[in-house]
Image: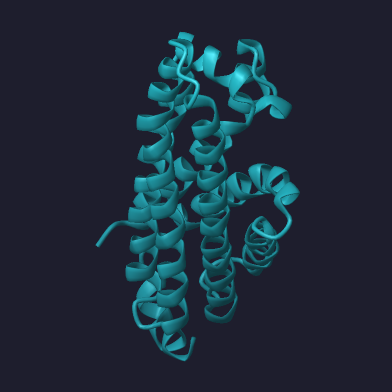
Length: 227
């Protein structure tokens, strides 16, 4: 059984890894010549990626690793704090769907986009339209994954409030953050809010989990059954 400290560290790693996207998108990409308005413009993006593929591969590799770490942490949370709770089991399934989708779409981007960029730079007329289609598909799948991720946050938070696993404020914050995350699919502009709030909440949750006393899980078993 993983320790509470290990699980907390895993959640903190997940939160910090997602949060690392903010300086990448707001500083690194603009410095390379790619602004938010140009994100789906192949004539802007692909020449830059062709000259420097690490702009795609480095963030992609980071996200694949941290989402994998996050999946282990989610399973550990369920096993340690709510193995008898149907609510937490269903919520954890949603969280694993979210993280799996992000691993898959980042793996696709990692392997396909640099090749498209090289083809575009070599004069392939198909590479540009293919990039636009791929970007739209990956973004739609990612936002769909956010629905499952938001439901995990809400489900975990409701469980934590009912079972008194963590401070209630962490649960109420999780419900709010999860609701906005779920709504990303329907109101994509909310993604900008989620880029800030989801990492912050995961770090807070991780810090709280890491400080949970080892005796907490056994004491909560009767309440978990009711959750």
